[in-house]
Length: 165
Image (cartoon, rainbow, N blue to C red; front, side):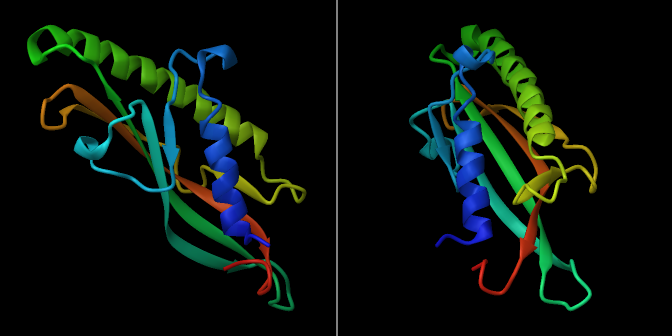
């Protein structure tokens, strides 16, 4: 049986895969990975990569048998235009703005969907501060890619020794 951490990662992959025009977004994600790659390694843009970093355990019951794990999650979105640097610069800036818009909608909708309720195995928390989006442009060897990076906290709830890896 997958751990709560593994279940949470799988759920986030599924959620990121909903970033499609059919679901009200402007952009179309092509690939979602549980790692962050260098922009030059990415062929199938638009790619979203994420990873779980620092984990802080907090006691959730008086008997110390139940814990919540606060996990720092870092997300990177990489997009590309096919034009050269001069003519593609404006298109790249517009594409990056479009992705910033989509990621803002995504974060608020996922946060609302996975609110801090006992029935949810995890929730997206802004306890450590609202997510800050860092756009980088241009990136990659050909300077025809842009990236957006953000961090947020995931609280994996009610973890027992037998339910997490």
